[in-house]
Length: 483
Image 1: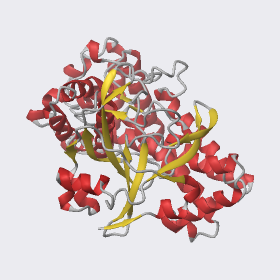
Image 2: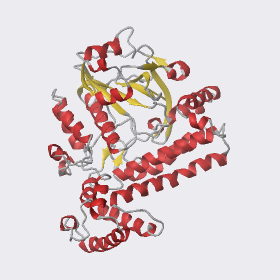
Image 3: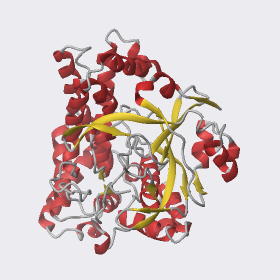
Image 4: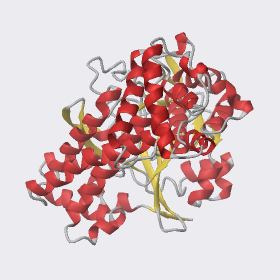
């Protein structure tokens, strides 16, 4: 294993050295062995004493150059320069056997210069939610940070009520955000902004650095990766909840999980964050907010690019998002894209979504049920889900015609659809049940639910209880940003 500290050493203007503080009666409760092996971490770190020595001891490799990162960001559309890692520390960067870099980032580390009078702690509730979400999205095929481990404690912290502090270490390509660039741009520090670009070209956009117009290539890649990410969010019915620019990754990955939710009933205007009454970050607003955030980032490229070049890069967002989304939705409905069927297929997809919205059908469960659609059957189980049978029957005619024209064997189509429509998604009411048990010291459901989320497309008898739509009381639970 090779550990590096390039961010701490080369971007000193964005890094404040801080040592993690151990919690009272800490325990390494969960360790992601598969992920640790994939990125080449020492096997002995899976043992609590060895891991805590690495994290807390005076010469521990994980605190030798641990730093809190400084950045700004647009929060709910308003610029705020006073942001940064208020409870997180970049511990180190692992370089794996393929020479790829992975940040090890500790969340809930304690106070930093950017804590703004807060305690720098995370609570068990939010730590579990992030662990579950990052692993759930990863196994669905949605780009995301990953969870390496979860540390519990008996240390009290105070939010709406007294809770127990916890920590987690997460892994991703880097924690560089749109807000890092915005901070230097809006504070008029051009040389430091240049240093940040140089760093990114050196470590994260190596291919772009070789382009004849490296800044344009970099902006275009960020635009395209962000568009593809949000297309996946939309197709899987995932709502992030807090798309501030300081929560947007230059790598087009999902991170900084807060009041997220997978849709239960399909409500396009669904708001998962009770701190967002205006719905800025509602489900159907996510594509537009993605472009808004990219415009904010693109401002920081103005010293290097002409306005027309920036427009060129941003114009690629809608095309990329719609193309990716169309592909994903074709796969979910078992439709084969073609030029001749493009308009008809789009109508079938849009009508299906409109039917789900009008009748508030469970998004994931109904798509999964559609995988059983049989051209030679009346599909009564699916039909009975809808009140407006006439509209359903008319849609079935068009859908059946499209499937027949494709000439794909029914068994093959059904198998492929099951590979694009998860049997199990992360429901908030199930996450809350995991949290309730974990707060009592019982992690049995946590481990079983993680095992189920690792195989979301498979129908495994042991995990069937996680596949059902939520009861009425479990829908649209209010989730706050507080952690």
